[in-house]
Image (cartoon, rainbow, N blue to C red; front, side, top):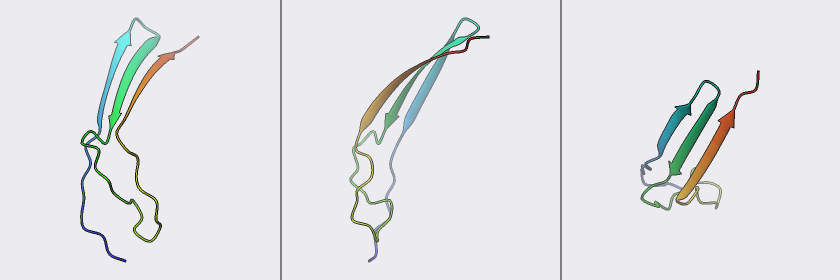
Length: 59
């Protein structure tokens, strides 16, 4: 099976708060492109998704 070339757009932003805390936002597949990462397997790639994270480092 062949697959036409494709491109997806992912955006990531992180902001450091103080010395030990970081917040982040990850926006995956911004244009919600439907694609198969492995053409031989009938599974589609990740649809549009937004993930927020908070990371705190304890010394």
